[in-house]
Length: 186
Image (spheres, rainbow, N blue to C red):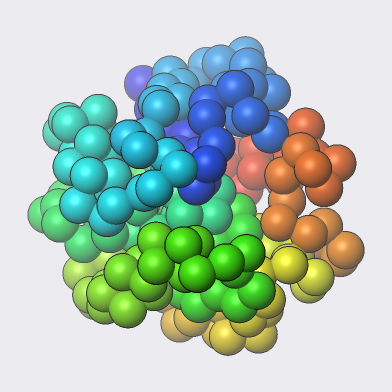
């Protein structure tokens, strides 16, 4: 059975944004869906998020899929570089490799390790046969062209939503049908 892990972003929880809608829709389609609460969501730390994801997933396989939002995308990528088994694929929403316009110095301090700790993209590519990035052309955290290019280098299909902000509830997103379309294409 296909399993989908939906990984929320920084400061979020499983019941935020479009995650409950997506989980319900995927279950109707026969997927097993897991939407974990990631540790220390207000102060995310790479090692804790990757370890948590490894514990939650257990033994991944070709029927293991991921959907991540924002820093959840980073956690998925960093998890994928630690495994030795290819997964089915991933849909990245508002994913990033670089950020601008963080609120304050505390946010910059929290984000710094996520921005500065390299990701072994070759290892990720070996474990990620298919991926899509859904990104907005006006994400308030900027770096649109740079992030789009980095995901293209990963081999991700790029889908641009015009004027969608950070693609969360505060931007009007309580549903996100393109995620289902992309997963169905895997």
